Image 1 (cartoon, rainbow, N blue to C red):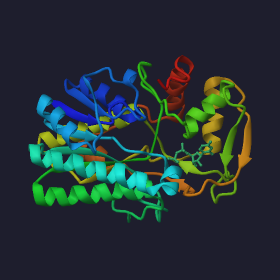
Image 2: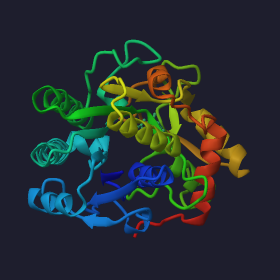
Image 3: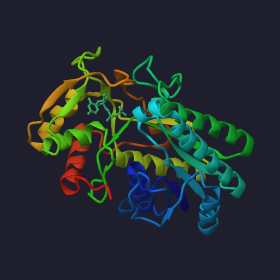
Length: 328
Ligand code: UDP
């Protein structure tokens, strides 16, 4: 089937395009290339465009007649969203509305949406189930929650079927080494730790070691990007084949690792000493985020293939050594 993949030139989007192609589908990437990379689009056509540009969306939809949409296109820097919320609401919420209206008007009935565990805010229970209250503590998480709410209303009013996938911490790279993480600026822990291992940065700064966790550093649930990608394929296929589904699923490994665990594992994988400095807490960081992904395992048969932190960091390291600063 043909799927329009907004943000298909980005990190998770490009891995999903590869997984779609491996399952016999055609991904049509629609990306404004603000953060995406043309080199990451290898499994179908690239159409440059912004989701807020309705005319351009109409053109591409008319040309390819996609049967469904997988929607990644969004800004995703939590800190920036606090400083410039308008940018996040305009792009993530306004852009999604424009996309959803286009889907309604062209009669495209299926969408898988890239949501986030940041929509839960500070968790009241660990691991976090999908039924946990959603009270985001930053505009990025709020913008994703608002789209989830629009999806609910568009389902009821216009019959657009959707699944929101709430990711925990996406990490790692394509095991074949064809694509990987290349954010600019890079803010994520694992690529920064690998920069410090390879000497491209002098050290890694741990954002706070006085949290109420066993080693004092924040705990996160790292999930391999190819496992995330596979979940999108299962989700969109479940929609197109009318399987019974929940409106939202968590995607995580159900296991937490601290910042210090990540650094120690990266030292073991790279066989390098990683210089560490302890810095201040980063505003908006919950101490512990771990997801319960049993629902998607049960309903869609999703099973992570790279659940082990060492495997995740090994694939990231292979990519990092190959393409350390591929941001063109
Ligand atoms: N982190 C850190 N130093 C860094 C970058 C991140 O200590 O230079 C911590 C961050 O505070 C969080 C964890 O690593 O507890 C994962 O952060 P990341 O930005 O990768 O993902 P997030 O959890 O914000 O989605």
